[in-house]
Amino acid sequence: MPMLRPAREVSFAAALAIGLGLASGAAAQNYPAKPIRLIVPFAPGGPADVIGRIIGQQLNVILGQSIVVENRGGAGGTIGARLAAMADPDGYTLMFANTSTMSINPAVYRHLDYNPAKAFARWR
Image 1 (spheres, one colour):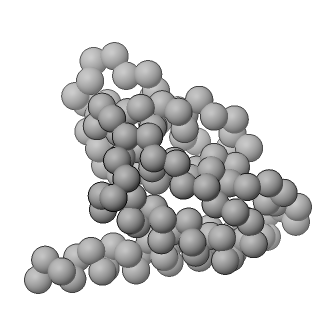
Image 2 (tube, one colour; image 1 turned 90 degrees about the vertical axis):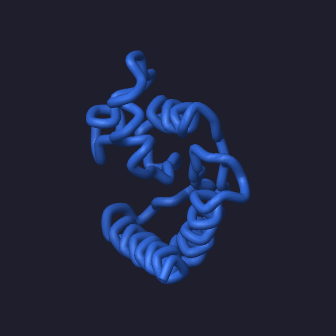
């Protein structure tokens, strides 16, 4: 059954992307006015990249705006997570997060450049 889990995760990711699209349309009528950057904090070609690109395609269809998938792999995802944490909180930079970038890395690395509990708030 190992093949069922990735399909289930892709389905969940697609549903999440659709939900994000519907919620953003109700929140602001002029969003998005420019391309959206989706940071995938892992190397191209891996499972996170594939799912991130599927989500990017779905968001492109839903929002009618270009989604630029940007791979920033390295250090267990901390390089891409740091980049996303330092981005302007305007909704034009998204990150494909997982348990390593949000919970494992803060427990493993002593000096992390971002605090997942504070840096990735919905509204600041």
